[in-house]
Amino acid sequence: MSSKNNPITYWVAVAIVTICALYLIVPLLTQFDFSLRMKRDVLSLDAYVSVFTTKPNAVDPPKFYTSLLFSAGMAVLTIAFSLLVIVPTTFWVNYRLPKFKPVMDLFSVMPFAIPGIVLAFGYLRTYTSPPLALTNTDAGTAFLLVGGYTVGVMPYVYRSVDTGLRAIDIRTLTEAARSLGAGWATVIWKVIMPNLRAAVISASLITFAVAVGEYTLANFLFPDERAFGSYIAAIGRNRIFEPAALTIISYLLVWACVLAVQRIGRGSTQTQTAVIR
Amino acid sequence: MPSRRVSLAWVGLVPFLLFGLAFLIYPASTILARSFIDKDGGLTLANVFAVFEPSLLDAYGASLQISIVTAIGGAIMGSLLAWAVSMGGLPHSVRSVVVTVSSVAANFGGIPLAFAFITLLGRTGALTKFLTVLGVDLYGLGFSIYSLQGLMLAYLYFQFPLMVLIMLPAFDGLKREWREATASLGGNVVDYWRHVGLPILLPSFLGSTVLLFGNAFGAYATAEALTGSRVDIITRVISRQIRGDVLYNPGLSYALALGMVVILVAAISIYSLLQRRASRWRQ
Image 1 (cartoon, helix red, strand yellow):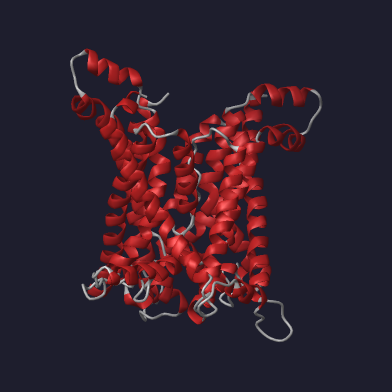
Image 2: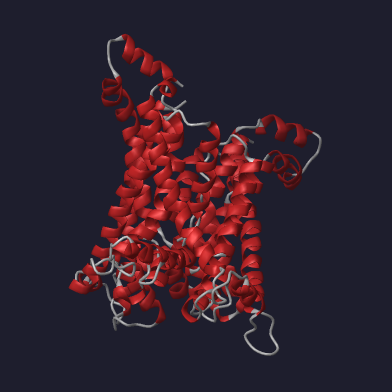
């Protein structure tokens, strides 16, 4: 780089990186420090222990585990549902219906126009009364939540899968498989999916990171606060040090997912975000 | 035969179309339709006009203000950081750390982000206390983390990292030859940025800024946990309306949601337009 010889450029760059790094790191460091201060005058992991062991009543397990398990389950269902809906369709559009491409592109930006709160509002007003009273049952409500998350991550999943598909010769692969007698399900599952491994795993990890801590949709669809996001919010209202511990735990969760994505998609410059706010 | 093959090909899209219909189109069209229907089922524009009531306009105003400020602030900060790691001559390891941390921060938000900023800048926050030691009394100066300004600081935490992720490829796409061509024509660094670099980056920059705007405009969880009822942004008004008909007019809540969608659709249209211009310089 020619700019390497220019000391002014270099030091300006150093200053910018330092300021931005402080902005991102200091709030976490102070939060981490605070999470260790539950016991007076000494550093301890008491806040974390409290998070891991506080039970809502005598019989039930700690809310931390039950809510995390619930949201992780929803996240996994979202991964399965979004892949099921998006991978075959994106493959099919690339393979047989390139004319439909602009419509897919349009679909993939539409979620940006409908934020989580509007989605929650729309679902509750649409699916609470007959004939489509999905919110009457847990399964129906969970289906709405998974569908809503899928809408939220669709732009990201679609882009990952589409980029992945364009990097391989789907025509040759598909025709080879078809000529050997493979059905369409076999083509997608045994031929296309293995070639999309990196894209699919990245999309799944980001989906997981986003869905597990999601608050807005989860809290409105399940007002009994059984989601992890709702649990964190409730702890924030009632406790002092535990919210700090939960912030650190949430951050590490996102961190782990992002690191794994980068391990898999080395060298890819694709934007790694699929936010549902 | 070919015509039959094509018609069968469309069948492959049915699952996706059903999904889009159930989770996007149908709920959205419900909001759209009911915005124009009154209590007795007749067509009306009253709901849409009711949005122009001062308290609701204030909520829209606060949302717009926070989204515009954090979009522009985040865009500038993020672009500077993207420039620094792309062209600042820093070691490559700095770049990969910045990309990782930005990816995490861009995906981090919601309730925990609010907690982190309360611990940092709340009345007894770590930075607040630290500044008091230095003789700066933030809260005495009128600052509060539980305000629109405080919320902006928290939003910036996910806004500028997102900008870094979007702008980094744009900076990387600036070709060396263009700089050399400018130099061979007798241009200096200023000429290069003024006539080559910035004009090429501008569509990406503006498009990304619009994306950040949308990112902040729809945000709800952070505001709920940080400022709660102290700052009324439009997503909070809608949240109260979901919990119960606090406006005493169900039709109005549809119109409020519709207003958000209209603003975001406008933003996305601008974004797509700018994106198309930006892609002209990429291969």
